[in-house]
Image (cartoon, rainbow, N blue to C red; front, side, top):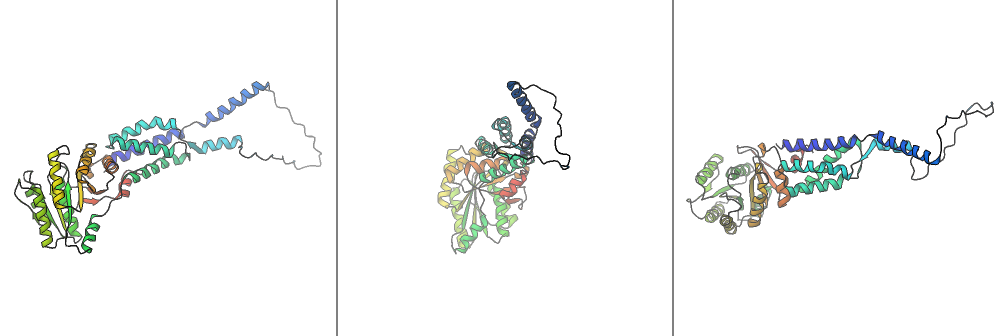
Length: 371
């Protein structure tokens, strides 16, 4: 998972580090020598053989007189100290950073990081490392650490859905906790809802499923099949019926039977289909969900940005689920949707089985990128 982005970020940081480390110290020494020669030529000092020193000290003095060292003026360093400081410490210049900036931007874009997000990351990295004095061996580690901090700031810390449901239960509210799921066709939304229902059931939270996708052929049967497998009831109506009424009926069923949570499945719709977007707005107004979740596919790439923007504008989504993360070698989608929406990623889908869904862990995600 996310292997390509991990490897490319690692290689880029290493390349910059090696470039900085290979600055030849001999160039510094050679420059000093040339400067010294030029100063000698200007002053008219000719190169001569060294004069042999005559020892005029009294013979009775056996121990050599220690040379009196003049105190070093404040703010001045000896030539040796200057050279050794050059050897042990380096600075990444703005010019050097610019050389590798385009390469970094390209590898981020290739790995599904949106342009806006890539530019922000690069600018923040530049501010952190350009002109900063570092030990040579620390350069690569510093770049990685700065990347880690940047990504931590981009991703919003997720909340736990089950905790929010339990809070409402503890308030002794007779109203069930209602979650509305939305997204485009083919992202695995219906299967994801079944996975969450199974996860909640494992935590002793009762739930009912609402088959509010009354448009897609076999969608109701698909949700009912999931419900049978995990032992959860499904409320449905006929195809072509009002999806908002299905959601409403499921909420009334939950109230009557003291069920904790209602999960509403909706028809997948393209974010550009205005009539269908209005339809899901109606479902939201009728059912008044406590939580609205967008379900998107990790492999979609930058297209997911426009999708999530449209649903957020229409519904005001509060969380995101990314499916098929187990086969996503790039990982940039998570960074993009996290930054663009400023909404947390709540879950990652990692396979077809009901237990193949995991709460999104920001620190774990950063570790998978090798940072």
